[in-house]
Length: 134
Image (tube, rainbow, N blue to C red; front, side, top):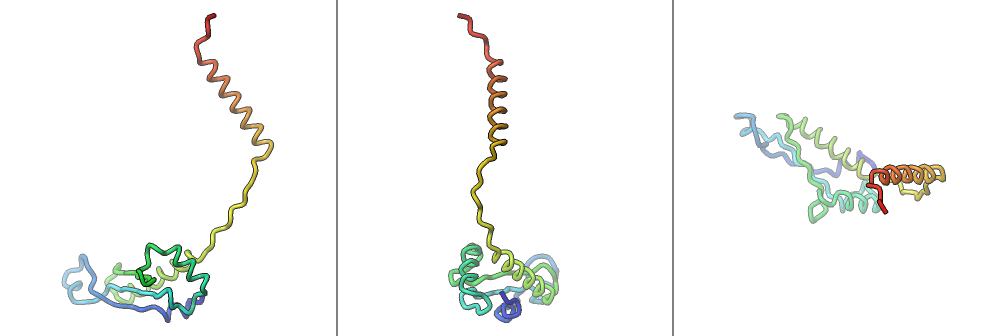
């Protein structure tokens, strides 16, 4: 993954932010909408694209475009920086492949401990029962 090429493929759009802010909110476009076309990315390999499609399926549109919004600050530039940071972190974390699980057997000692523990609990519970009077 080449982050410089990735950054060139990003599209930004500034819109008016919602929420508190008084007159400032009505005058400035500080909300940033970051969009990234996953299908036509040159920075990612085919395998990386397939992996990201699977992991980010809930965040992608039907056209496989990832859209992120940022309206945390009143500054458009700061929101743009935050959106880029968030985007790079999202891509980086979702490109990590999980380790394959190896099957393991319980050790002989652990099997022995478990059986002894089970015997102790069964004796304990047997002593709780009322004695049989024949």
